Image 1 (cartoon, helix red, strand yellow):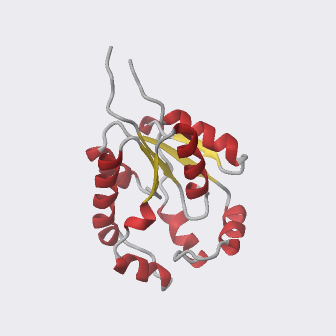
Image 2 (cartoon, helix red, strand yellow):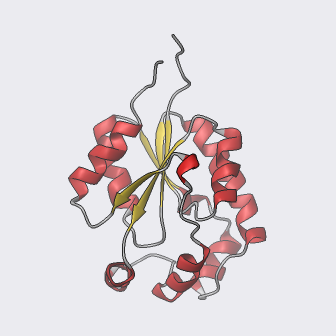
Length: 169
């Protein structure tokens, strides 16, 4: 019997998919800490996005380092993090090898509607195209749980909270 380290769940997807809303509800169900990777962006990244300029891999590198460190330091937890590329997910797995990932998948019209209704976030709706272009859907070998983000929040939260359950095999 193997007891795994405390579980961390990365709830991923493009802006507007519902990562924070679902993540907060899932963390409450699971009784774990909720973290939002947006809070870990360097000030320069926030300013760049707020100005409508997409981030590139160089911009994201120190942010991903901070996200990985927070996952390790805060386990068990659920982290809302875009994790758009396979390389970004691999970077997080390097420090948190037992991390589980779930993708909130939503069609473009629904994403646009959510983003246009959102207030007080530095990420403008104008960057949706760049996020969708950057998103690399997870390969089956990654073991990412893909969830239809149009489902009710309570159903999504329950599915994500189940990923946070301790593992023993």
